[in-house]
Image (tube, rainbow, N blue to C red):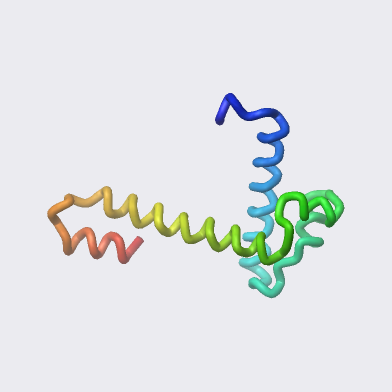
Length: 99
């Protein structure tokens, strides 16, 4: 945790994380077309307009989730590659593809 962040910044980061987590679950069950900011707000016990302080639109939330997923894939690939001997190119290729 960053000690330089204010309580408000930490609370905002936590709520942003919770919104994204609920949205990911929705994507898993309903697909992208079923992503619903009102339902997310309802699950968090907040009014739907409050969600827009964190994500200005449904599309921006979806974009943030896509970026998070892309970054997670990249991190998994980098970890798999790092676990291999740098000179063992076939093994690195298999590990990266498998990741």
